[in-house]
Amino acid sequence: MALSDNSFCDFTDCAYDETTDTLVCKGGTRFNANYNEATADHDLEVLDTDVTAVFTVKDDDTLTCEDSLGMLKDVVFLRLEAAESELAATEAGN
Image (cartoon, rainbow, N blue to C red; front, top):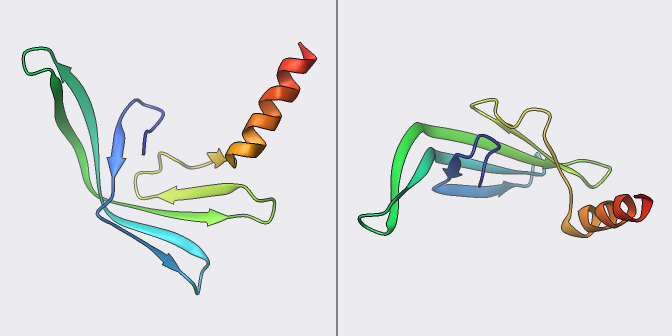
């Protein structure tokens, strides 16, 4: 997943927890991907390891996440359709 500070996080294990109705991701690595012109590829700069994240769908159909780094606190994810509708309404108002 891409984070707001331009870093990324990959998880080795994500599983749905039926008891808590959440998606629990473990074994994450947070990294920067720096483009290397000499190799025409990205060099990975590891920033954090063993990152965890728990994703929860709320009653209003939004998705929230609590992660072990605290980077996604208060971030609310919208479904693509809802985000597109919100964007169209905003553009129509301009």
